[in-house]
Length: 94
Image (cartoon, rainbow, N blue to C red; front, side):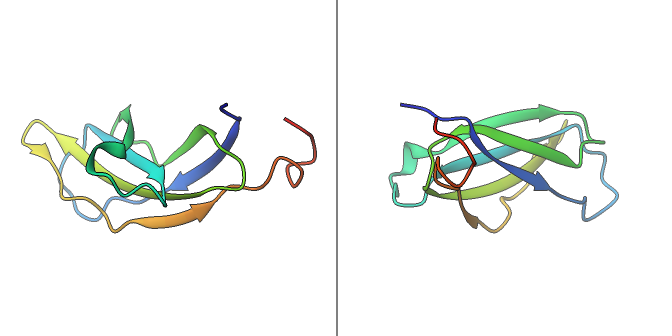
């Protein structure tokens, strides 16, 4: 079952290289298998915020980010661990 819980990410570019888009990688923190990462590709170098939706409630997630342009994809950012609220903390039952 999937819920509509989400995280909002905000990020800033670190250098002046032209960025064409970003890739957000995420997975449940407890799932350490190599193929477990889901991803969302975001087109547009001017983007500075994105919301990852359809996450499970009361679940820790690892998230990381890369950017890309015609030269390729950047190294991955450090992983960040965040936890979604429970369905009751959201103020409604899902």
